[in-house]
Length: 368
Image (cartoon, rainbow, N blue to C red; front, side):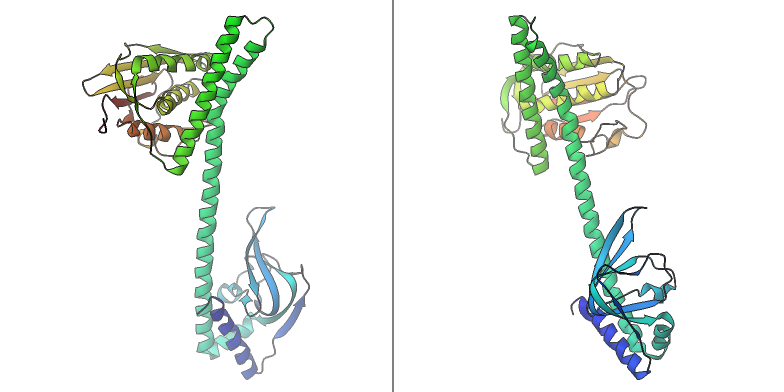
């Protein structure tokens, strides 16, 4: 049975019962665009559509009316007035010239008391309508969540791109200065090139996350030389935020399998997250420890530390810890990158300290 059949059956039985009881229903005609009833009007009866099209809508805010559904010839609406005897919960408007049969609540109740088939037909039609409404509601919720996720993802992109773009702007200004020396121009060119590469890598990582891809290539890299490049690339933007990085241990001078383009994102994100929680400036302390199996890295800041009860949620996508511009994607991406390297990452709560994040990088991968 199609969705329209239960409703047509109810209208057919209703018309039959009206004829048998010699009750004359009211026939009402509405021009296209004419309001049949408004939300809040008395629920005085139901309407069956003999010919035409009717839209049901309701206010979702004081100024925003949302279309709920449309009913065509052979359908009926306004049945809630029969069921709960309450004011109209929505508005009805003729979308084209329409001819409607109106049956008052008293007439319908009287007919239902006399005709069990009419009661069953109404319940059957109402059940189908509720199923359709639930399905429509679920689809709208899914669409709303999809749009919300797209918005959060877009905000994440904009937020993450601001830092390298600000460095590019500063470097371009320095290079364009009439008093800039050849050395300063060369340094500015290097900064711009580094940040453009960083932007490219960041966008590739966001695409990787959106596509669910985990494919990546690892190459042998000297970690000490690589980390020196990380410090060089992040120095300017952190200094602009009055944040300094202190490397408190020696950096392991060892070759290990890395994807440096992706690992950049881990350090950049941890450093910039720490800076966001130190708006008046502060320090970031980095420590390393090497074991026969892996490198252990620890990043600590002088910020306020973790709020109670959030440590277990920090790597959940879209969870934010109160940052006005935070989107909750950064740490989940970091987790994905570290785990793709065969390592692990976690926050560490230390009384009297700021935020502390630890992660490991294996000296050898299973593939190697």
